[in-house]
Length: 130
Ligand code: FES
Image (tube, rainbow, N blue to C red):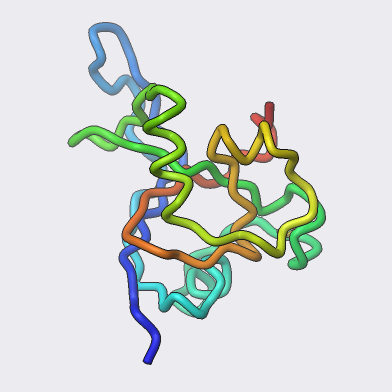
């Protein structure tokens, strides 16, 4: 039987002066995703609209980033070791677009990403890939 994980999807949300949020997230939802279902498909099943195009891991339309957030839903800046630990919460072996450096930074193609643990994803990130 498939394990199911809680995947928190956050769109937007900016840190302001003094670490206080100056713009709350536009979307902040947590969905249950079985470990044999892609996160994008699970979101769609639960009526959450995320961007996509190829649905095969070969473009960047569905790009998200696996992140750590604080209690206010603000994305935290973290070191590479902490990022690596977060990245292990996702299996996106089928992806064919991101290079190793981008993968190390936590970029995730949600159309081919299975959860391996509870995790938080910053969605709608195509314009920010770097
Ligand atoms: S929709 Fe193209 S990689 Fe996900």
